[in-house]
Length: 87
Image (cartoon, rainbow, N blue to C red; front, side, top):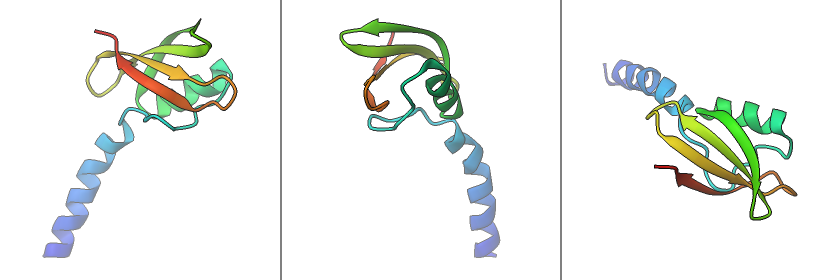
């Protein structure tokens, strides 16, 4: 019975985990197509890219919360260096 409960719990939590925001250090890519796809997979729907402070800024909406976010990407490595709540 415990095993069935754990299995049911794991299945019910998995979809929510699939839409977790990306984290600092995640590699999303250095071009808009790769970054958009990686961020979308992580639950962040990109609406705009712009250069800011030597980094790429991706403006996106967190699928889980609906909040507007700013994700800063290092253009050389493709790693996320910072994430800010836009509100």
